[in-house]
Amino acid sequence: LPAQAVMKAAMQAYVDRTNAGDAQGLLDLFATGAIIEDPVGTAPKRGAEIGAWFSDAVAFGTRIHPVAPIRGSHANQALLVFDVTFRPPGGALTRIRSADVCTFDEAGLITGLKAFWGPEDVEALGDEA
Amino acid sequence: LPAQAVMKAAMQAYVDRTNAGDAQGLLDLFATGAIIEDPVGTAPKRGAEIGAWFSDAVAFGTRIHPVAPIRGSHANQALLVFDVTFRPPGGALTRIRSADVCTFDEAGLITGLKAFWGPEDVEALGDEA
Image 1 (cartoon, chains in turn purple, yellow):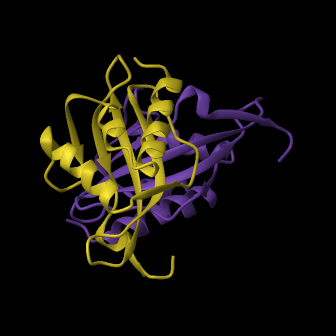
Image 2: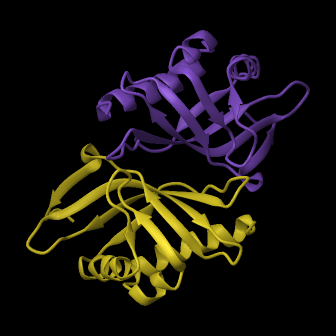
């Protein structure tokens, strides 16, 4: 199993690289063949879809605001709870109250990411921020 | 799928009944055959093990302190992030930084609970609180 500190550092890097607009840096955190299900209950993203996903995130000015320390586990998973803001093309500044569960390989790369947020966890902030 | 509000109300009831020391009320939130994996990476608890688990939680004065609004999903899962305090027999007041992912049946009963916390998310508070 990867060490707790390795998993938590990777999830903190996920926050930092998102907020720095570093799409390549985000991709570098993921193992080949990784699957992103964001949000849980929608079609998983793989391969080139993940690259496009991060490019969009950067283009939309996505910022992740953690709201509690990252949780580990007694297995190869860790959890980050956060609010995320972004502005889609032509749309309002939007905030989603979300949480990501990541699964890691032995090298500390992310093999799976599941994001927990529902339709009622999304709020349009307009131009207030 | 259960409504977002139904899942979130059940998880809030899980908090409230824990804090009220209501072990039977906690059991009533779970479907027959439910599985608790707390923490993730340890042996799942089923049936009578779950009853004993909640009895211990009440006996240890367990209190759940949510640290963010409950998250839903686009499926039959929701997520609560919290700190939990308890005092095991002869032990110190202890705090764990945790998060629960619950899976629900169509009736809004919990069929699975996975708690995300690692060995480094546990802190002995001693007698300070």
